[in-house]
Image (cartoon, rainbow, N blue to C red):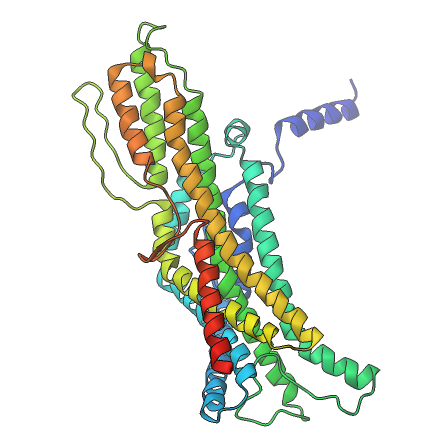
Length: 442
């Protein structure tokens, strides 16, 4: 037997036994897009594992630069609106700048929530890692992790791409318009303009200060966009994983084989397996329970902080303000469209209208999917062959079904439990704001 043949045989065996590094899905695959956007502005939303992920001084300086610049532009926008209303002029332009103000404020608040709740976010991710399917083919196929990852990436990439298209359009529109008029059409009426607010402490028209001013406002738009969407992308990623766990639990309960009457110690085996499923359910919900089998049946609950509880605690206020800001943004944009504008401005406004409505719809849709997935546990319990089970088994199922009847959803603080019906509330609120602004203008 030749040496070449032996090498080929060893290589072929090694190729069959060893998996490539990306063969198994890990939790970072779900979180990579929000992490990427956060890191582009110099922020780690939670403590990443590994020594190579420790940020350096340059990383912190990048975040400081982004925040100082964004809030400086925000201050200029607020001052511009104040001056416009004081002098009773630029009403239409002020409406657009007010929509920018709301967008930046929500972005700031979401970034602030991440900074203040960083430890809770870290604990949330660690808790998710503890229930994530291990890097083994059998477990990941049982959970169908790859399908949920594709689903997650489809939503996050689509949503992130939409908002990146929005901010790129707004950042480049003014300078592209000026460049075309000046260098291609050679128009004598070509006028320099900046993306968001024309008022600055210095004169930037027709001098070198135009370019740093333009760059500063463009950076501020990108910073606000990253702060705005990254939190939503993280919520989507967490929600998809929670849905995956609920679906897996519902499937396990539906396919549960009761052996109480077919095997000698079948009742004890059923109780042991059900205990594992209930413990899994409680771990998803963040509830700790105790089921003593040899004694009388009792149940205690402690530490009622679930994955979605932590997520709502971190982003609840930002979600509430997100609804208010998006509602205001939609009505301002609708008002500008209704009074008649240029075709290029109409295209920009339609893009921002689509983006704002898509964001609210996705939040409502994910919350509704959480409600449906958590409620499916009740139906899974009912579909089991519980009539042939041990009495202790059936009592435990009752408690499991009762616990599952409380829906899991996203909440905008204590004021609003989000569901698909919230979308209609959002649209009604936007229409009322639109009517109020239209009346003021007339």
